[in-house]
Image (cartoon, rainbow, N blue to C red; front, top):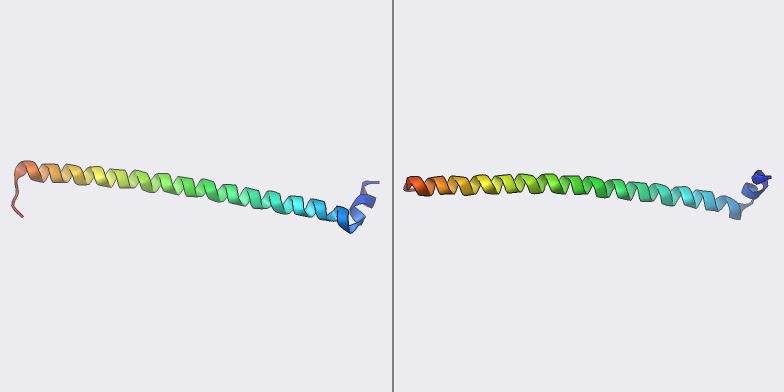
Length: 67
């Protein structure tokens, strides 16, 4: 009985569109998660670099090394 429903073109379109939209949703969410991880990584690296630069400038200021 369920095969009769899938034999019509209108009924066959629903599972195809459902698979398409679910796969698109999965790909978009995966891309979003990856972007979030990359953003957090680069943000953390930038903060570390900025902190190291500030420490280096403070050390140069304490030693009063002429440029």
